[in-house]
Amino acid sequence: MTPAVLVRGLRKAFDDHTVLESLDLEIRRGSVFALLGPNGAGKTTTVRILATQLTADGGEVLVAGHDPSSEPDAVRRAIGVTGQFAAVDDLFTGRENLQLMADLHHLGRLGRARVTELLRRFDLVDAADRPASTYSGGMRRRLDLAMGLMGRPEILFLDEPTTGLDPRTRRGLWDLVRELAADGVTVLLTTQYLEEADQLAERVAVLDGGRIVAEGTPEELKRLVGGGHVRLRFADPDDVARAGSVLPAAVADPATLTVRVPGEGFGAVREVVDLLETAGLVAVDLSVHTPDLDDVFLTLTGKVTS
Amino acid sequence: MTAATAPVADVWTMSRRQLRRIRRYPSLTVMLVGLPVVFLLLFVFVLGGTLSGGLGGSSYVDYVVPGVLAMTVASVVQGPIISVAQDMSEGIIARFRTMAIFRPSVLAGHVLGGLLQAVLGVVVVLGVSVAIGFRPDAGLAGWAGVLGLVVAFGAVLTWLAVAMGLAADSVETASNVGLPLTLLPFLGSGFVPTDSMPGPLRVFAEYQPFTPVTETLRGFLLAAPVPPSTWLLALGWCALIGVGGYLWARRGYERRS
Image 1 (cartoon, each protein chain N blue to C red):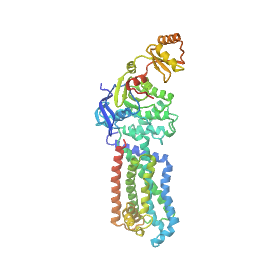
Image 2 (spheres, each protein chain N blue to C red):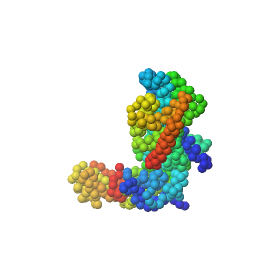
Image 3 (cartoon, helix red, strand yellow):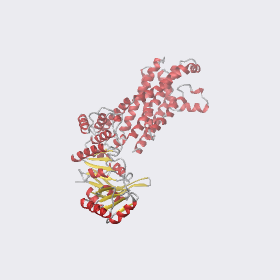
Image 4 (cartoon, rainbow over the protein chains, first blue to last red):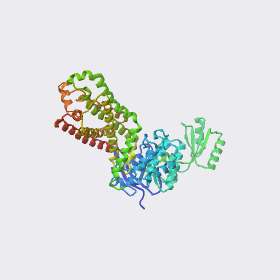
């Protein structure tokens, strides 16, 4: 079976500013794929090219088996898009926004039932007849997503779907994405939140400076950075220096008064505590840090994310 | 839905969307139609007494109404300028671009909505005119001519308005870019005859779009003969503004992806 999205050597520049240079992507049908990267990495540009909103400068692109530049309508029939900024009509109620989508998908008499179904599924029944301008950020995002699903897309592009949402609303949206994936919808998600990619995606590609710098399952990517570490914080710089010398392979950072010791699990913590006790040192704080995608990102790009 | 009827359905959907948006935001329409009504009352009741002196005794209200009608069209198309700019800022246009819909339907919806708004505006202003003593002599053919010209002029100015709305960077600028359009009727034959104006201004006033449109409307409404040079100039301007506005709008729409 052909992949849902296939990209080879994709290039795009705005004037003389190169945004994407030779991007490769392959997204298996029915999977959730995360494109991870900081602001300006080229995530939105990639989605806009795949969603037929922008034309590429070069490279090969197939979405649902069709080339967005030569067969845009075939691509459009297969996709749903939810952007970073909820694209809803503020003067319309939630129901009217959805009905508009139903009409544009030429659903005819079936449209009403589909509108009701989506309102229920996205928990918008109570607010259905209120103007979208009165909706909270989370409700707008849900309405936006529901609008993108009206045409039962095979492939869904979610461009930073949870940016600016509070943690609870974010979790609610994650559940919706998981449900969609369970229904067999292919999801391409862009995000700058490593946790989000970790939570939702089967495969993650890290985008930096217009290129994919790493790709794999979240587990594979975490393995790239090796094990975790025990993080200790001390009250004064002398303690930091002493801890740095008594603990094996420790990295001391006097600026933040912290010391990082490689290792994870109970054994590592006991060893660290034993060594500190022998040396007569007391840490203000101790935490065990298992590697997450933040470490991957830092390792791969040398940049710290938000 | 067949491939042949889909464009019609999409234009119809987008036009209904636009009409609903206009209904949801009635204060804008009230303001845009209110402006020519205010000018009508101002010119008839405040300035009309003096101005009619220069008209050789004919009724000033009869003279000024055609000009105010042309101005009404110019005033009401400020609506589409703002609503197009609003659409662009809200990102729903971006969504439409990712859907397999008839592409020109988005703009066509704005144009049809704006045109209907303009025709309704003209009807309201005509009603007020009659209430304050305007007595048109037009027969059936004359009214048909008035309707035809209002629709044609309204349609082409709406295309121009859509292009202006696309060209505006924000909703704030959009509410200003149309200002010349509302001022232009004053530099024509709508409120005073052009022969009373000084040289270069008179030449401009005689040939600018609003003058032949106003003169043609005046002829139809008062059942007076309209010289072919006048109505041909009116139609010529309509064609020019229409084609120019359409091309500009299309370019703006492609650019604002």
